[in-house]
Length: 457
Image (cartoon, one colour):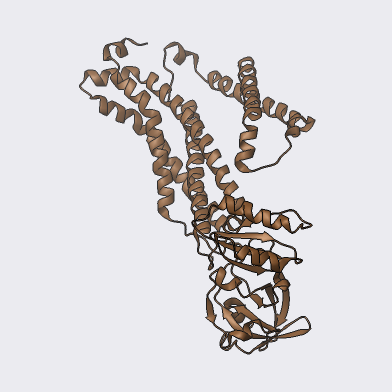
């Protein structure tokens, strides 16, 4: 038994290593990974593989040796091998475990994909579509901005000190005028065109528009006003930033300026008419009818004409927003790949078990057909036992997957709710896959001529 196990296991390991080499580039590209494959030839990896090979040989050879050594010679010579013994339970146990893993992975994949779709489709509180962000240098900024405004296909141009969803934000701590507690405030500077270009909404609009760009005036978002304990009367309150006192002249409605994995945090915004003070990034609102590739090429040409020290780079605001969830996207792809492999392996195990069962019940099927059993009843007879295994797998997998996904979702401030139908759908899919896998052998056995079945030994 061990000789056959060594040969079979060695062939399996060789095929596995070959598949690793062939599929590694595809797998790394799918998950956007950059890993040096040299570790596959390191002594540590090779020793681990050889150790795993030895363990597999030991287990694979021990099982049939122990199983056959337990048979009683008298019963074997009489042809009475009990199919319901320990061997049958082991086969059914492994098949159930394989399908439990498959159902759990299907359910987790559905939850991860739904959460990812939820994050990407959530309204962040600003208009992020068709917004081009270009890092710029302050010299020649005014001329560059004016030339971009005149270009066909550009609906608006604004400036800000930072790129949303890209560079992060700066922070300072300020004391609440009422509670005297320190509150961390994110902040950035913008010009007058920034707020309307991104469609930011007012909670409390400045009474005097000219006061918006007056020095030492700032805007807060709703969360900042609440954290500073001035939400009931924020206008006119003085907020200390560094050594300067700043008067609150307006409150913006909350919008997401960071990932939706976090709750909206306090934000302070300085609006200035000295556009060079906010001239780190230009925001261009592009027309929906514009040719984006041609327009970006034109922007690059204008940018290069000013002979900047830094090369031309750009990003789109909606793409920056999607990039925040690259880790979740990779997780969804990984779950999808592992789910496909797990379902395939589970189907192989179920198919083998169905084939074995059909062979062992050949005479029983022949007798039933002679007594008038229909093909449908025979198919149902053979499929029923396997569906029981699948339902047991669903009962095992569902609580485990629910617990794991519930813990994973706790890391998100904004998340979907775990719906029962997600796991019910995973179970229904597993049942459908099991029926398709078993049906081939079941139908084949049901359509076999009963005369041939009764003649089989």
